[in-house]
Length: 96
Image (cartoon, rainbow, N blue to C red; front, side, top):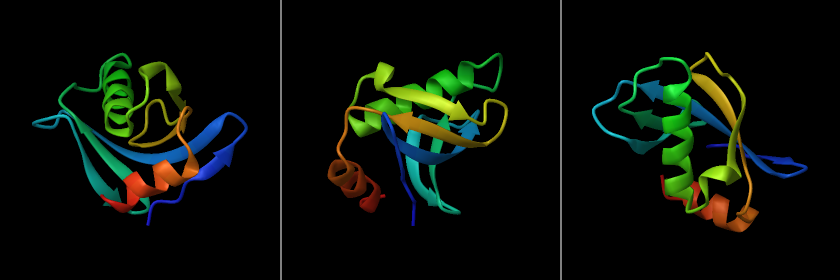
């Protein structure tokens, strides 16, 4: 189960990042985190941007509403998501 944490500005989502994948997609739950795969290789933050973009697309929020807070150089990241209610977020996460 993916655990979301409340934050003063929105919700914190743990993400397991996979760079250099065959396609951009949200694959589901992996060890308590949302697994997000992107084709971009991990180079100068480009993969982090691609993960943010894919996460925003999947959640249906603007890219500016998704911000990487922790894990810049790690596969284990925490993203802050704004502009979505807890109910909407839990509903989306339950479908993966």
